[in-house]
Image (tube, rainbow, N blue to C red):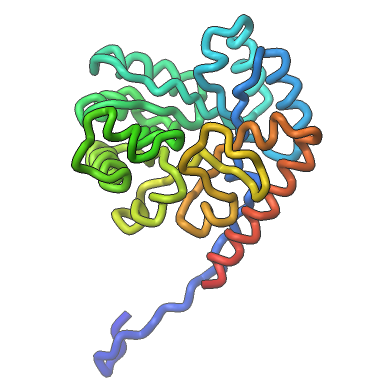
Length: 256
């Protein structure tokens, strides 16, 4: 606002910034042996988090449709991590079906034309689309094997993030190591970060892993955590510990 003196006045905010609740930003990956085990895990974590990922490990499992119905009917948020990749027309139809079912997050993959086809299929629904950048189980040697001899992982991640942004995607799947650079590219892009490993947890197959607090401070908006929770002797205690780390980080960012 400009005062009579011509000096710009700073408008006071009408309300305080909304505090981010970490429990809304933790996505538990249900990469479990079968639907019954996955359903039990969802019930076990009831009240701790309400966001769950169903991915390729359960895609053809017997009863997976009942699991999806259970999650949606129980008002849980569903991250369908099927990495849709096909010709534009097929992709548009598949994404439209996911949107009609009430999926919250959906992953797609491919060129800008394919991403635009997915955006078309999403229509006016609230479902958010994410493109995969570089898997967190990859390092530079894997990238070279795929033909990216002259590019770093960060360069490839940022190239795909820029393509996703220009095509109308809501965000990207990326490790915490590239989250800060993605946010510098655009604050509009949401960053969903897998490869999360709490301090002291075994490395597994995640080559570009990061601890929960560090990933949030780097710019991740959501964390996807599987084995550190689902394989833990006490999944509830493990989830609560991760949520506590995330909450500290979110609160720290709010104070900056």
